[in-house]
Image (cartoon, rainbow, N blue to C red; front, side, top):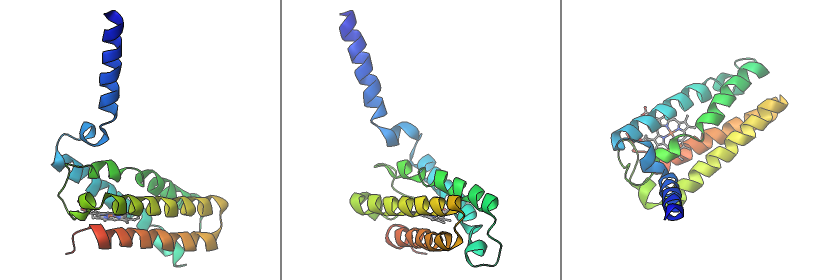
Length: 150
Ligand code: HEC
């Protein structure tokens, strides 16, 4: 009996862990707010790299890396807030009807961000510029497909 109880408890805990979306947000509004906030921060920190990529500001590795680190961390955060049940905000319904397409868009974005990080760490400006362009395109590609047009 005692053993069964322990197993049941472990099972219940695992079941909880396998519910990433709903376990993390109080309600859909909280999820919308969370993902919009991470997008705003992404815009701010990715945006600070733009003058560097355009050669309007010097490529100072420490400053660049500080912003890339934030972008890299943020690149993992918004997606749990797009779990089923969190429809709304400025996200198109396609996020929930085209799960594969949305997942591919997030993965493409994350791959570009890794490339940006590698270039920043290597202090390689040309590679940084190329990766910056790729990240920017992946933001836009996802917005074109999955964000409500205004
Ligand atoms: C995989 C999809 C995806 C990627 C990649 C993505 N976004 Fe978004 N973004 C969205 C969606 C969807 C919204 C609409 C907000 C919502 O979900 O309710 C949005 C909204 C935004 C907003 C508006 C936030 C607000 O409500 O004020 C900004 C700013 C933004 N994104 C910036 C970026 C930047 C910068 C990047 C790349 C560095 C990026 N996003 C990458 C999907 C994406």
